[in-house]
Image (cartoon, rainbow, N blue to C red; front, side, top):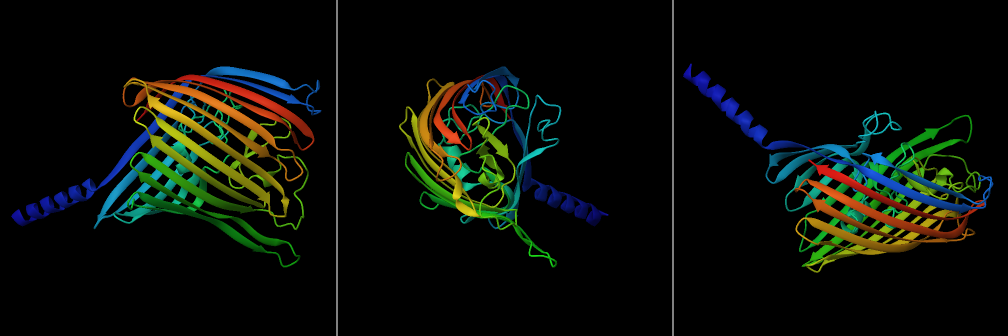
Length: 415
C-alpha cells in the first residue's frame, strides 16, 4: 500500500515537473481610436469625368489599429533539457469593429504568424511556418515610427483609412512575411547576429497532350546580419523572392496597365492605374522580386536617432524591361520627453517607377510626428500626424500626382 502511494506521489511529482518545464502565453494588442484621412489625386485619366482628379476625406472610429495592428497570439516554450528547447507562435489579426474577427473582407482569422521550431542555447534557433522576413525584422527595429499604420512613413509604406472596407494595410517597400518558410537565427557572438529564410512551395504539372504545364513555384531566400556596439546598432538584409504561377511563354505581361499581377511577388502591393495609390494583391504571376534594406540606430541618451535605406525591384520574368522599382530613405528621432511622455519625428523621400524603363519616375516625400502618453506599462494614449506628396508621373495611360495626410488619436492596450 505504501509502495503504491509512493509510486503515485512520484508520478504526480514527475508530471508536475514536466509541466513546469513548458509554458504557453496568451498575448495581444487592442488598438482603437479616431482616425482621419485626406487624399487628393490630380489625374488626366478618363476614369474621372471632369479629368481634374478627386479629393476624398474620411474620418471615424476604428479598431484596426493606427499605432499597431490589433492582434491575438499564443506562444509557447518547452525545455527539452541540455540547453535545447522547443517553441511555437500562432498569431492572428483582429478587427474589433467588424463582425468577423479578422475583418468582414477576410471571412475568418487572418494569419499573421504560425511557426514551430527548436532552439539551442549558445548556437541559435530554426523554425518552419509563416514568418516575418529578415527585412521586416530589421525595418521594425530601425523605424522611428515603429511601423505604425498612418501615412508619412516612406520605408514602411502602410496606411489606415477611416472608412470601413476602404482602409487596408499595404507595404510597397518590402515583403513583410512569407509562408512555407524555413528560418534560422543565431545567438549573439560578440555583438553579431545573423538570420535567414528559405521559402518553398513548388509543384510541377506534366500535360501529355500538349506543351503546356510546368512549375507553379513560390520560392526565395533572405539573409540578414546586424551588429551592436555600445550605443550603436547597424544591420543589413537582402531577400530575393520568385513567384511562378503562369506557364505561358509570353514575352510580355498581358495588358499594359500597372495593376497587372506581375508587379507583385508574394503578398505585396502595386499601384492602381486609376487611383495612383497602393493596392493589395495576394498573388503574383511570374515575378522576380529583389529587395534590400540597410538600417541603423544610435542612442544619444536624451534621444535615439534612426536611419534607413530600402530598395525593391519586382521584374516580370518573361521580360525584364517590365518592372516595378521603388527606393526610399528616411531619418528620424525618438525620445522620452518625460518618464511617461514619448515622442518621435521622421522625414523621408524616395522615387518610384511603376511599369518599366519607358515609364517616368515619380518622386515622393513624407514626414510624420507622433507621441505616446503612458498610463501604465501596458496602456497608452497616442497622437499621430503624417503627410506624403507624390510628384506628377505617368502610370500606364494615366498621368497623376497625389498627396495624402492622416491623423489618429487613440488608445492602445497590450496584454
